[in-house]
Image (tube, rainbow, N blue to C red; front, side, top):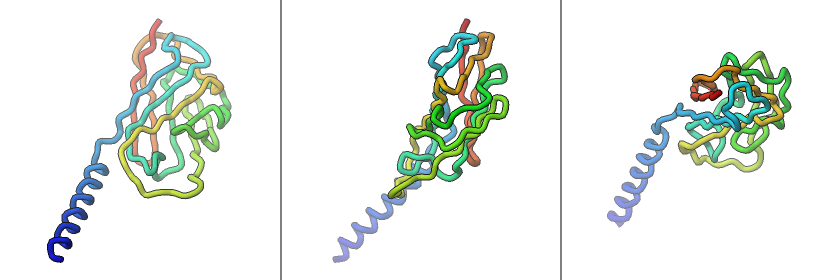
Amino acid sequence: MHIRRSSCLVVAIASLCLAAIALAAPAGLATATLSSSKAGARHVTLTVSLTTELQCGRLMGSRTLVVTLPAKARIAKTVPATAVLVSGKAVSQVAVAGRVLTLSLAPPRGMTCNSITTGIAKVVVGRAAGLRNPPAPGGYTVRVTHGAESFAAPLKIHS
């Protein structure tokens, strides 16, 4: 009986240690890709991949995501919610202020789980958003903010 309790205690401690390691994993890493990296290209699809903590594959915490495009990039004055996906799901609303997109994430529906792990959340700004690349070749940055986390994803624009 004493051995079983000790074994259970060891398993419980190991589980807690593994959970702590998963929670302490590095976050804040981001990459960005374009459907065309040509300078001045129009109706480009932008995909930003964020390495962060996810709960059941979804972003945790804040229901707002702010995407700041490079200074010379252009986007339509209004962007339909269906033009932006976060982790494969359409956002509920997109507000555009210059080159800043504020995305309202739809609340989770149905059953939820408590599985928290480091993973990749993808933000896809589709062609219908009217994104235009900066007119000059060079290195640029897309910035994303989600709650207290900030991400910077480099972009390379070619001639």
